[in-house]
Image (cartoon, rainbow, N blue to C red; front, side):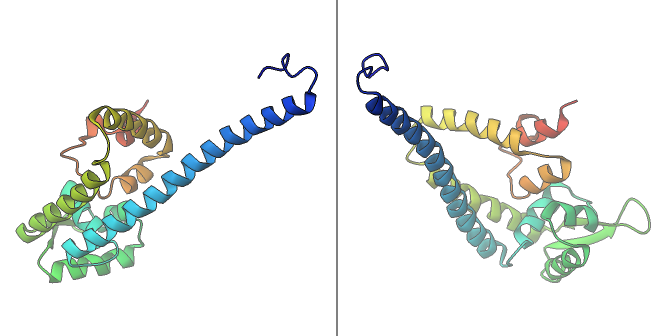
Length: 195
């Protein structure tokens, strides 16, 4: 109903405008709320699966995946990527090394130590990424191919806009499978590589 049609009933016009505004706002609020619920559900499921497959809790799965992406990285670089202090990262690396998943080798200079996955570490990394992929594939299962393509475009836009800087980009992608989303196609990488 237009304002002209409501000319004799201004209260009805105001009510309809307010109802429309409420519905638009509630739809945006609801969309944001649904996104938040999905993000938490996926994060919880992926964390639990990654910790199970890594046989380590907390940030260890991200450390394994990250070292696999950047062989030879320093403990400082790993700490920045997984979002922990230097000392907390040293403790994680110590546990992973004790389990035969990570080894320390000489780094770029004599003070630095480069981190590398062992064969067991590489296998564990594959298992972590496989578990993550299974959860995400299951989450996308109800969507048609067309819906998935649209979602991909929306996710690329959101992730690109959400990325603040290099450190944030590395943290966002700490559990990503770079074989399915290589740097040149990654919206997070593209966001921080812009001139």
